[in-house]
Length: 91
Image (cartoon, rainbow, N blue to C red; front, side, top):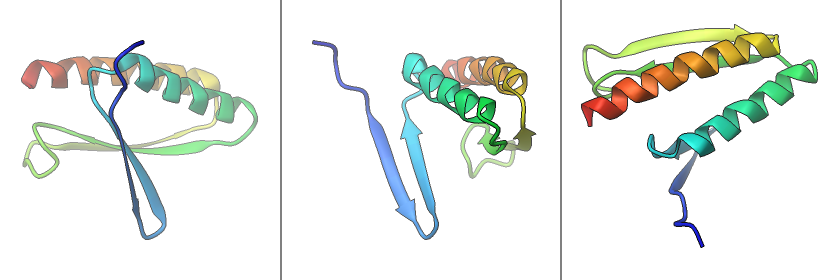
């Protein structure tokens, strides 16, 4: 049996936040691919993404992206992989 993955769920007000370990790239990719299926069914999504040394760091990058096509989600997934790779290098 494989080692279980850490998934932290936070429910705060009207938001549910999922926190995954950066090393669990297969789980992250599965979730992004599921978002692509959601978009494929005709429901656009708006992504709010923040990254940097830490969320409280002055070098934090924040971006918002609206995706209404599967191709946009795939492009974002590829960008996300690069960001994750660079963040893992800082750990």
